[in-house]
Length: 110
Image 1: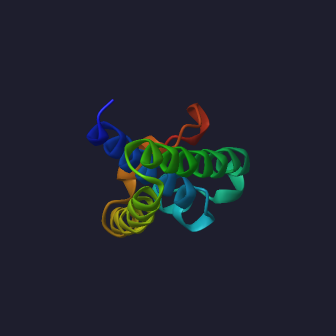
Image 2: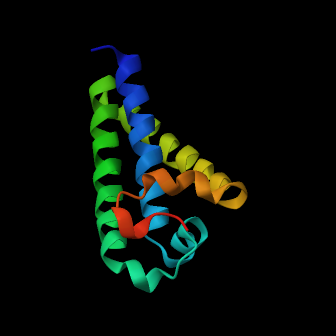
């Protein structure tokens, strides 16, 4: 597959991973879901695991796109960009991250 495909996949996985890791935190969960975080401990644990897995898959996608030295640099830059992007969404439109909550009927936004 082409290098552009792998980099696009890496960027999407990186943003999703950062979003899932942010939603695993009590404060951000409350911002997005308008509920107390103690009600949703189990979905938050799953989000933490999904976030870590997505970041690892993002690294693998970067390694598929380019040489290891360049891939790691691109991955670190994607980490920073995704973290800033998720922070900006959380500060202005936190409800936009609600689709990243994959928890079923009891965790939908109020």
